Length: 135
Length: 135
DNA sequence: AATAACCTTTAAGTCAACTTTAAGGCCAAG
DNA sequence: CTTGGCCTTAAAGTTGACTTAAAGGTTATT
Image 1: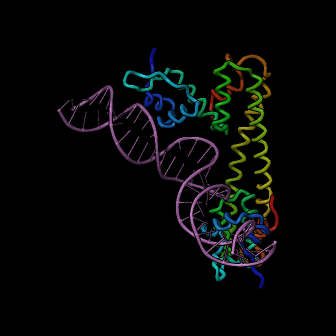
Image 2 (image 1 turned 30 degrees about the vertical axis):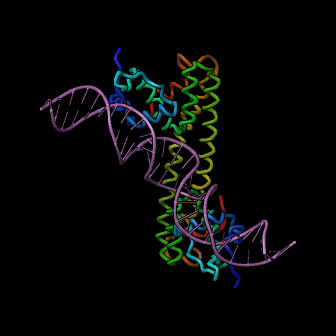
Image 3 (image 1 turned 90 degrees about the vertical axis):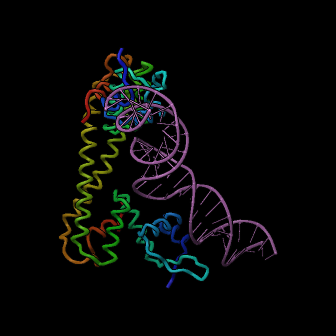
């Protein structure tokens, strides 16, 4: 069965060799076999595992969360657990959206009020909006 | 005119003394006067300046952006500049909201599909959704 | 045989926005 | 007059997710 060096894996997955070693240390990638010269040798499905990590990151999962998911997969664990992790993530994402939306509302309202003319002193609406109140 | 020690300022503003010194080094707070014993002495309006910083942070402005706004205020600069900074921020916030909303959509759809029953192997929808494609 | 292009390890650097630590000076209360 | 609580500085530590560097071994090509 064909195996890959860390450099070949890096090229196929788009993840830098050093990042792959980092993921190994962080227990996201399994400890691979070694050649006589102590070179890492990866099975082909290591590519898919790395791409899973990359995609999960793009979804906003942290490495800690991704590790949880990978451990579940490796242990062929319970789907309910995976669902819980994803549900927690969804909750956090919705909270972030709420927070940003509040900011968006105030900021766009303020920008609409501001003609962009005149000096800063004596009531620039942007500065006043920030100074006055949080949230 | 009454002045404040750094500790008093910290208490009134809710910002730790060390953070105030940090802001001074980062040129967000002006260099204050000193007593004979080399203690910092702040005018009362330093409280408002710190609160401006705190609120701007809550709005999601970075210290770099806040520094820009403060420099404009200090120089009694052009309002159009402040408007530009705020408009850039608004754009960034909207981009973040878009990104998070895409994630939210896929994740909530995926969660709805997942019964939470069965093992991970052979098609857990959550894992598959992440594995399949980035966005 | 030499050289380039890999691979190995450990350690340190990056970014933001601070916090913590260390080592010491100043001042009010008991 | 000493103890505790402020204040001073510079330097190092924190978090997350790596990247860069240093120093050296291996393999492939010329």
